[in-house]
Structures are given as structure tokens and as C-alpha cells.
Image (tube, rainbow, N blue to C red):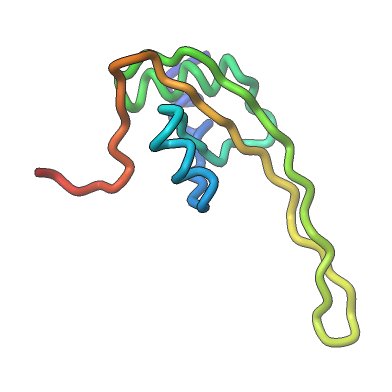
Amino acid sequence: MSQEKLMNVLLGPHVSEKSARIAETANQFVFRVRRDATSTDVKAAVELMFEVKVADVNVVNVAGKQKRFGQRLGRRQDYKKAYVRLAPGQSIDLTGTEA
């Protein structure tokens, strides 16, 4: 896959209590990814963008919830997220602050 396509695989970090907990304990990070992305695409994209060694990638399809808007029913969009486990000794700084 070309570098241009790999740069578009990751949509952004998925921030939640669970993702913060596993980032601290298991050296694992969660990203929202394109719906057509595979785990090999995600691995290559993370290694390219963050210059780290990826040990494992798990991809999950998340179904959108059904919500009400007044009397009308609506539905949130489905999305895909990837759990990326880094090799020992590797780290990603998602806060964006420089020391």
C-alpha cells in the first residue's frame, strides 16, 4: 500500500476510560480507523506515522446506536476501531505536548 493511502487509514485516537486504562497497563492504544482498513493496513500506518514497532493489532467493527430525535428515530454511524499493542519498550505520545 502506498504511503499516501497509509496516511489516511488512521482517523484519530479513540479516547475513553477503557482506552486510557489499557494504555497504562497493557501498552496498547486505540484508534478509529477507516471502515475498509485491515489489520495489516493499520499496523503499517502506525509504524509509518509514529515510528514504533507494532506487536499486534485487533480490529473491531462497532455498530451505531439507535437514538431518538424528538418523535423521529435516528441512527448513529457504524465505525471501526483498532487496538494496537506495541512491542516492549515502545511508546506513543498522544497528548501532543513536548517536554
